Picture 1 (tube, rainbow, N blue to C red):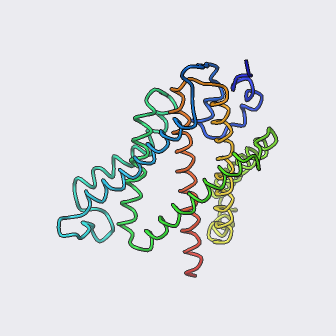
Picture 2: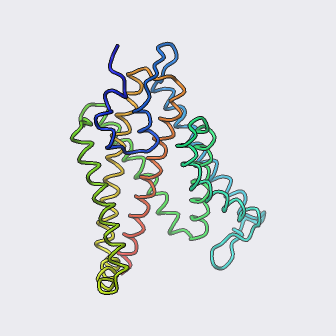
Picture 3: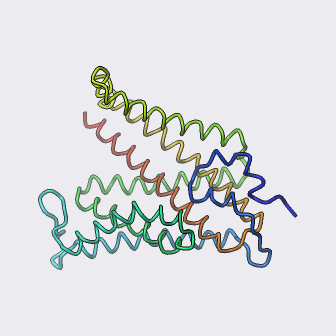
Length: 274
């Protein structure tokens, strides 16, 4: 029998990326008759993406009055009581559902769908509340995300890029360094003597843009690790129920990448206005 996914990844388990997909590295079950497949994972991934669309459509239906004008107040918040209530629920979904999905795996078909729904709803609300300029940024971020995901998938599944132990180590080192740097900046901001220096750094748009570019690159490279974990899950014949883990984990990575791209586009627009 081929080495299990857990056996092949345990040596580098410290270098975990997606907290949901990485859990597959500890699964040792196999089921030759009813195992994971690319078709099954793709179908479930499309299900989660469809829930994002449902969130977008629901927001549009709840925040538009029959006359066709958006029911927003002057500060951009929706006037509709129903729309406001759902917005709060959607925001809560974004925070809680990923945690529930990681802690209680059997809930992923529901908690994952709720997270994706909340993402679509909040994005739709933001696009309507902040006007046409923000909508164009969201659309561009969607297009760029699709291009990046397709490119990473092509590079991995055609064998042009291999996810080795060194690749995982370098990638994890990058994210750990970025987290450490953020922690150092936070501590320096608390010290009166270094606070002006930190403030000047945060006000520097070029540094902010550079940081966003770095996070987009890291998020893009993490997709390669996710693809590698999914391939191993399929090759090792993990039971079909783990398709939900793989598909939601990949959807989570794609959404994370999308937000990083959107953040970068927002900073670029601010820089161009100066």
